Every structure is written in structure tokens, then in C-alpha cells.
Image 1 (cartoon, helix red, strand yellow):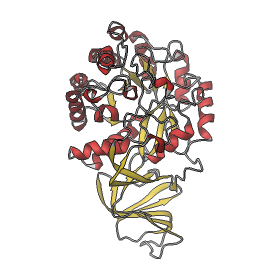
Image 2 (cartoon, rainbow, N blue to C red; image 1 turned 180 degrees about the vertical axis):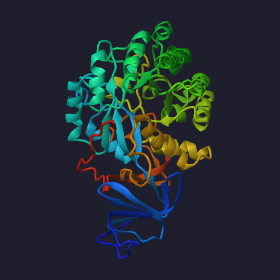
Image 3 (cartoon, one colour; image 1 turned 135 degrees about the vertical axis):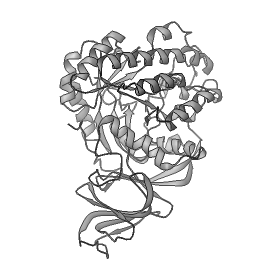
Image 4 (tube, rainbow, N blue to C red; image 1 turned 30 degrees about the vertical axis):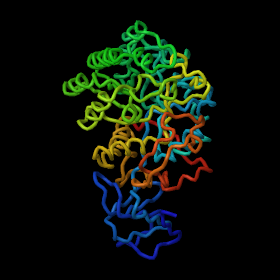
Length: 460
């Protein structure tokens, strides 16, 4: 065992004689902005003490974090497609939340598609909650959807606790979640602004993509040509313009085009309420390296060139991009068309929920970036995006959600050993740094046998 755990009352007492439900202590604890020797006291699922190492906090249960481990706050992934009910064969709450826990993610926010029904009204939200409630190994919240004709449902969904609303500016890939025109998006933005909700946008321009070469066959270059950067750039400019006009809080999903960084920077400087995310596949994979027929790499917007990737990393370091989230978008293997390898036919999506932290840490480590910065992008900032004030960091008063992480351990990705329901990944065989040895939610270990995650709602 890499972690020494003492069960039962610890022999040492803190200065007040208080016994906590759980004490975690180690030489490397990320609390606040830095990693330092600390002790953490937990009671009733909350962090109630953060003290220097050696204080001697007493706990009914004590976890000694090993010398090669870092105690991290549980990560928050605000972009996950669970697909249950309706397409549970693609992924379900049990498999998705087990994958999250194995990757150090203790809270996910589920996208309003590709489940059937999509989360576009109260009835659909309750169906989602019922499906998740009995199968959640981590905390689960929900986005609502903004589609043509459901403007009347937006406020009700907001009041029921969704974290914001997702829309598409082109075909979503599934017919039951139709896209909005730019004018319809603006109308819904104005509605959301009236109760301070958040519009999150899949920003690719439908007309540009319709007029681009259609992808056919196994050449990745052909697929890349079918989703040009200008489609993203144009749509992001429209999001900025309409967000500025309505005053809504707006968020750009899965940024892949580095061309858009300057307009995003300028919009933020002008006071537009804009946030932006990108994903591990855009930060770790390169279009130049994608083999013919390797449809596991297909996602929308697409993985682009090395120069583009370098600029995305620069955008992160400069704070232009706020978050790194998975956009975990799985499907069955047959929908990825692996037999024929046709990029025009294959489903576009990468499943990486379990691998996000080691993927980003492996890349960040090579670039001389600190683990603290990675957690800012993958825990602190996604929590801020969703308004999850009790998540994402180790501080007094926050929820006792943790990941115990061995940053120097390495492993080789084996899709058969992941909790994802369908064993296909562009990362198969890749060697990564960083192993999550344990995840803890509300002071209790995730044991992968008893689903004890909570359904969470937007904090008022």
C-alpha cells in the first residue's frame, strides 16, 4: 500500500483536543496556492481545519499521505456527456462516474445531450436525476439545453438548479437537440441575462462548414479541411458580439482554433463576461501525427497542428483560456467506424474523462509548469465557471473532496483497463505521468462498489 492509514482514534491530539471524522496529513498538500506540509481536518463532509504539518490533529480515521504523493482537491469537469438514459450503451452514470473517480475528478457537470430525452425541460431533468441518483460514484450536476422553442423552459430549469444552458450554432450531431440561429441565441441570451444564468456555446459556424469540403475516407487532412478554423473564429466573434449586446455571461466550449485568442483577449479586456475552455486532446495531440483511418482521433472542432497547440498553451498561461475540461464524448465502437476508418462516417468525440489529469500533467511537466497551475485549470476555474463555491480547492469550509496523486508514477494507457464503457481511445499505448491512487468524496473513499456521489444543484 502506498498510503498508510490508521483507523481508530489517533494517538495525538490537536491543541483543542478535538477529534475529527478524518484527518489527512502529508508533506505535499495543495491548499490555497501552494504545495506544503499540512494536516487537514474533516467533519461532516466538510474541511474544518487546515494546519501546518506536525500540529497533531486527531481523527477517528487518519490518512497519511505518502512521501511520493500529493494531496489535491478533487478536480471538477464541467464538460461530460454521460448519455444516460437513451444512449446508455455509449456511456452511463455508473461507468462515467467510476472513470471520473479513477482520474481524480470528484465532480462532473453533465451535458444536456446525447441522452434521450435531452435536458431541455423540467421533465427531462427529473429523468436525468433519477438515472444518475442511483449510479453516481462522484458528485453530478447538470447543464440545461437551449434549443428552438424552449425559451419558456429556461427559467424553470434555472430555478430547478441547472448550472447554465448549452446551445449549438450548427447541427449538434443528434436530431433531438437542434441548433439555434445566431439571432435565436441572442434572444435566449437576453432571457438568461434576466436571471443571471450562463450560456455555453458550441461555437462553429454552420454556413462555413456547409460550404467547406465534405469529409470522405480515411485521410485526416480531409476531415481537418471540413472543419476550418474560420468556422470557429466566426462563431466565437458572434458569441462575443451577442454577449456584449445582452450582458449575459457567456462561455466558449472546447476552443481548438488559436486564431480566436486575440479577439477573446480583447473582449475580456472590454468587460464582456466571457470565459473559455479547451480540452486535453487539443493540448496533447497533433494533426500531423494522426494516422490514416484513425477515427479514434475524430472530434469536433478538430485536433489541429503543432503551431496551433503551442498557441493554445500560451493562451492558458496568459489567462486568456480559463479551463481545461474533458469534453468526454464517447460512443460505441461501431459508431467510430473503426472497421472502415472513414472520417466522414465516424462519430466525432474523444473519451478521456479518466485520463485528463495525467494527460495534462504529462504535458505540463515537460513544459516546466507546476502541478498547482494544472489544478487551477482543472479544479479551481471550472468550479468558478459553474458557481460551485464549495468545490475545487482545499480550504476551510469547502467540501472534503480530494484526490491522492502520485505525480512521478508512470503508466501505459490500456483501454481495456479504463472504466469507460467503450474501449477506444486515441491515447491507447501512450505512456503518461501521474497516477491517481485514491479519490475521496465528502470525507469518504470512493470504493467503486457503493455509489455515494451526490446530485448537486446550482448554488443560489
